[in-house]
Amino acid sequence: MKRELESLVTQMHSSGVRYDDAVREFKKQYLLEVLVAHRGNQCKAAEELGMHRNTLSRAMADLGLTQSELSASLKRPPRSVRPVYSAFRQDFRQG
Image (tube, rainbow, N blue to C red):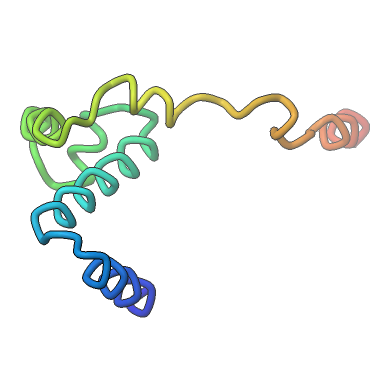
């Protein structure tokens, strides 16, 4: 992970990404990841992050992380991409 982070920082530096923009994008992606892991539940996400729910909500607003952006991350993939469990279900019923 450290190597990946170093590579990312090098790419950002060589691309001219400003520090403020890099920190902002990191925070936004990190919060989005935790929120998706908790299926959008801000109380549980805030608890994992070690902050109050209101602080998380304020941070989301400051970063421009909208509920619609979060909802888009929570949508189920199209049926063509979803794994098929029919064989599993059939084996389960027989066993």
